[in-house]
Image 1 (cartoon, helix red, strand yellow):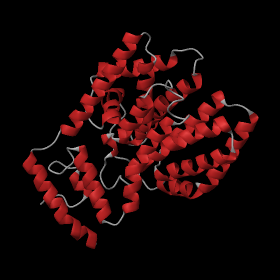
Image 2 (tube, rainbow, N blue to C red):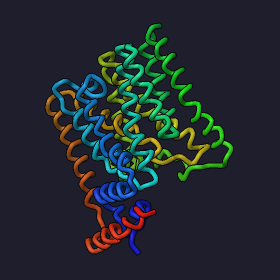
Image 3 (cartoon, helix red, strand yellow):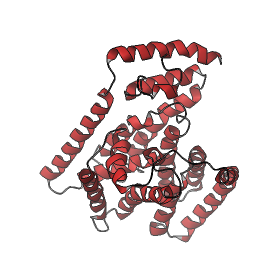
Image 4 (cartoon, rainbow, N blue to C red):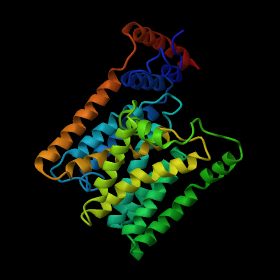
Length: 338
């Protein structure tokens, strides 16, 4: 028998070996279940980052005005194979991966303008992100830390406090649900916390959807990002600190809470991928000297393209894929009738 659900498509013999196959299969299956709205949100929402990167928020504020690095970040985020997940998670991880960066970008806009309209938009996006996935509070801590470091004006903090109070009232049903969940014995599906796993598996998975790095390469990449973002003195310090918090704080919190809960999986922090992409582009664009800067950007581009192509081309033999497609489309009418 072939795959009869999107979950089966992620298993060996299904379409799970090719991200493009997963994307089309999940899209087709969800549409066949008359959930077009969820599908369309899943497809269109990651493209928000590309639009944001062209504005004065999470994009040109981080990178030089003449640089197209922010657009590359948005493009890589939009085609990230890790967004292609099976049916169960299409309703939270992929949508959360769009809501969370959008909420953080709107938070940046609200802090810099301090207009009620921007705070209202931020509140709506943040409530949506919080309802979409359980670990969004990790990113609320990022926002709080950043605001206390750089925006300690009474007027800004006052409006932020009132916005958060309104958000807390809107999130009361979620708090009730979390209270019930805490006593239900629920646990995740992850393995034990490991720094080696973080460096070898989390980074390539968040960047390209699969694969692995050597421990030395993973440590070198994290160290390069840390030192590159710390360098520069006061020049664009808020942007660099925001990237540092956005990238490292959720990972640290995941490791901390992972010692008590089974949540140590890359998908639980998928919303740090934009920070990872922007941090790499920031460091590459800030490399001193034209030859070094071009060399860093060329290496990042070559490495990224090769990893994405390797992920995309890692497929089963053609007969098996064809059989999986036939079984999939045969299963669509039966599942639609349910």
